[in-house]
Image 1 (tube, one colour):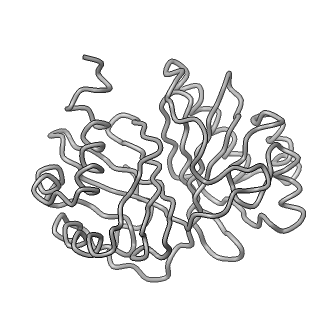
Image 2 (image 1 turned 120 degrees about the vertical axis):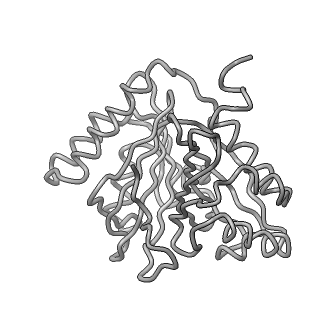
Length: 265
């Protein structure tokens, strides 16, 4: 059996959790979650019981997630989810990145996420979730991770000229763009910045997750004048970024847990 399909891998455990959540299978969810499950979503208390307390609300609305992409980095599993009938989360359709940590006993012990409403297709006809889903080039995982870390070192601390130059160094000229406010390629990105359609700055990168051709950067900064968390998913080919998806969420001023939206080990 391929290790990635073993029922005991972190990826398989998270896939079971997502399926159980969609089905509202409380006994299975209970067995998969650690009792002291640590929650980083600022609107939900920590603990397994608080998570299970959401199930009746989700059932009432028919809220469920369709997982578009799923990849793993050690004990961490990243799910790119499209939530439907998602009024409890703020809109009828939401797009999220969920990061789940699986402990040594195979229980899901910690969760981070960011969500934003689904948007119409951008100028290139792309949505927040469409595009390739297959994990490839696993032998390039660490090289791709290093490339994305190096890019964000410039984006968080470089001069304006260095940031502009970084796009030519790290991105393919015609990279595919899924942000709803920009078109494809480096030219499409800078046109959106100059028009004000994109208004953001990165201040700190907290973690980079990678498996093969997919790399997820989790960072914080400012979006349209407000503190925000940025989840940027990048697909690489031969060391160049050829595709970009993102979710941007304003950071709330109040939270029902003390774990912050970051706090990665």
